[in-house]
Length: 488
Image (cartoon, rainbow, N blue to C red; front, side, top):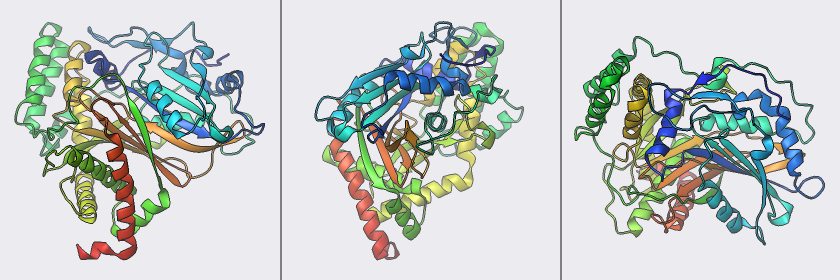
């Protein structure tokens, strides 16, 4: 029931393997991305059936062969990466299930169900994705819940998968035929590291980690690949270099402690027009408004705990899309990162915003940090699997950043499935070990949805953060209307 062309097996890339390794290193790390897509009542007053959904997916998933593949080995390690290979037992019905919310099916019930859904890891012995048809929402609404392992796709790619499922019209034409055998880009293949990669390290991560340290660590990784008997020693040496005191550490907070396996999921909804009004009046970008709202939420959370506000700020890892225009439906990970210091210590909301704008613009105009991050990832990929896991943990350690904030621009038109309009999208970002909070944003059809995920035991007071995020947008919008920025 799933028409896809047979393709050759392909090794997992080092970057994609990172997200498997993070899970293997710590039970608390759940490395799946996901989303909740909420639809209005269907043409017949109810949701589609599970059989109808499977049939709809069967017509379209031939464009993404990875969704019918599993890993040749469920774990990484040794001297080679696992391979993506076709699952001979693949059956869509094993990946698409049905569930129903308890009455009255409101926002509270939806988020409670979503928290449980996102708390469960994916089965590595099967293709690494799940979809649930969720019924019982208030007013005849229904939802699709999706969960895909980060080793398969990044946040930008997941939007492409959503476009494959959704339509721009309630009455779309028949789905186009599958393209057959995919290109290398379809499966996220990373090209061989260029000979200039080492020289680019001279400009890498300025202010975070000395270039000579990363250069030395990278050379150790190459040596480990060429001399496997030295691999474990090389890995320990590289890790020590990355974690030495010469790294300017992210702030030490109550949000960066050991976490558990459970997740609490919440949503903040704001108007895209309001965010545009703020950035138009005060300067900056939509992303700067989102970063400031998050910074305001974190500030309130730390203050409510009588915790000192770090003067340098909380460090956010902000993934960047590095896909080319030709990789629209490419799976695998094609991202780099910026590390932005969120000015949580500044009490004035407008100054907090302007400082966020200044810091973001400085990082973007310089360009060295993003290039350096990409180069470090490339060079880490030269290390054999047996020591790459050590490097992966170092790159996601709490010393490097306090939380992840990702922003995925979505379509600004109404989309449909089964003739039913999509109302809302709630995105999920994974939590690495010792990172108790994460924020994902997606804009859609005039709204922006902040998906906030947290460990419920470490952050039982998540409502404080959510309320402050909403208040931050109101404060900045008021400042935009009154021109308060001119007073700063």
